[in-house]
Length: 274
Image (cartoon, rainbow, N blue to C red; front, side, top):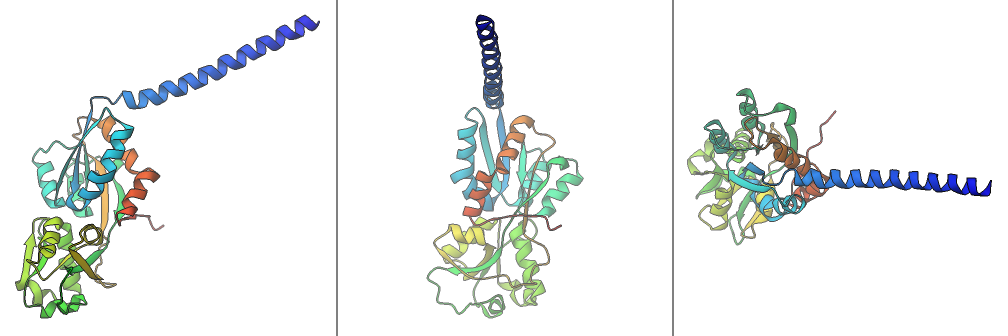
């Protein structure tokens, strides 16, 4: 009887070990396969210029560490310029815009996979001056008395410029300031104009102002100045040649570690108000 009991115990132990080994092995192969299956693929990222620093400095290296076999090629420009490039055949897998306007237009044209379209980040619009400026500019209303140049993004194609125009229009100062405007091709150009002193002041995103020691923030756009929230949507494009790698990149962006980096760079994670 004793020998029989020992035999039963031994059989049970073997079954447990085999089962556990199978589970571990399956999990290990799933883990390895999830990354290795993407080797040789590429993610072509089209992203608003205001995202360049966070992507180049932190997020793309983090993604590459997780997926070393995947190449990430970013293209940065104004959201309107990127929209036009995508419409004209730019090979892109993921698009991240600084406003819904450009994303929605591409979605209407069937170029965005709407199932993947996420209202992702929020930003703030701020008034900046050169770091060593002694100009008496303390509010948006003071823009009426600026004698020099006010730099903003071109409202025709740059979301930051569209927000700037909306704010100045709602504050009743657009007509008094329009002749003083210097229109930048993207928000980075506006930031550089102010940092280099070629413009007396400018309107950019708070994240841009935070990234450049050559400027200082005067104030945020007042409450009620913007009816349109500063939302950054992100989505996969329907003409993606590497949809699996694009999905992996989208999933990565929505991890806590990636979101924490966006917050570190001054963005806010958008939460739907239900």
